[in-house]
Image (cartoon, rainbow, N blue to C red):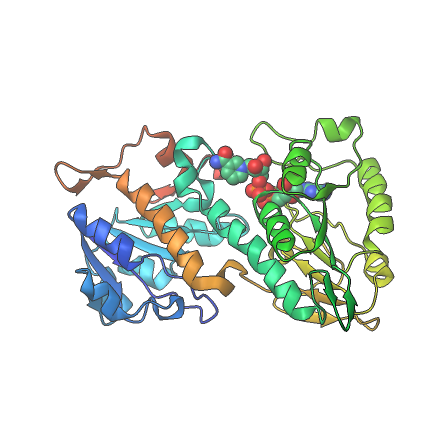
Length: 377
Ligand code: NAD
């Protein structure tokens, strides 16, 4: 059983799919582990650290994938790499499955069996493999760190001999995994935190973190959660009521962090240009949904925009990748625990159980076809 791990070709992707800890555990399962030279450097892991635990450092990606049975990456591997793989090899990554059907089809055509980690079901057994949660949690943390960097003032209240500094007011929009961590981080820094969401279950979670919940709590709100725990798209009427509430609240905020997403759809627009304008000069907005179209008018992917009124809108790409070493540690653990379920530990060989719900949920391509239900009409 050969497991290959590649260096991410995008220079802005600092994460890596294996750590020395998980490499050691793969070797313990009977695998030979090949890691492309330099793969871990941007996550503070040297080639030497991998060789110390018994992994083989391969000069190039092509050397690493040679006759690999499993290829692990952070992002979807390039078509060139996929074409180097033997038929039926497993490619496991965050495949970004929506939005580029042609690329997914081309991946199927290479004959690899691809698994999209984003499709991991959110059930107790799979919590340890849940890449969306492990990465969103870090994005929520990093959003507050990025906001505090752009905010030219202190966050906590300070009473000093030279005067009193007021606590910053932080408003978190969307209280899922990222939003809850943003609330917790802002509270730890001493901010006065409020938060909103359309799912009623979020209220108690927000309050348990010591923040105040602000939302339009009407009949539609009571029904806004799907059976899978996600938000439903809200009606135009609800959105208008929500906008009026947010417009009043946002004026008084110093920092706004938006995280609202709806699976398989563009992010809902929650902050209009007028709302941005109504904020005080020096206020900061971090739009964590910018890669999915953005929650905030004026947010630009990969940029920090300063409006004429002096409000900064932060639209960093790949926010978990800004804290790459920690993101890699958690992502690599997510991958290891999934791959472990694909191995016959006695025989020390790959043995994919196609009846396993985790396999069925995450398998994207097999035997030359796209097989995930999300792509079958
Ligand atoms: P997400 O990334 O899809 O969305 C982020 C948040 O935005 C959600 O809380 C959503 O309700 C909110 N949102 C959407 N539209 C909004 C709007 N118009 N206004 C305000 N907020 C809006 O969500 P997520 O972080 O992936 O979490 C989704 C759910 O899954 C949560 O209930 C979470 O607790 C649950 N979850 C369960 C598990 C598990 O059981 N293993 C793991 C992770 C998350």
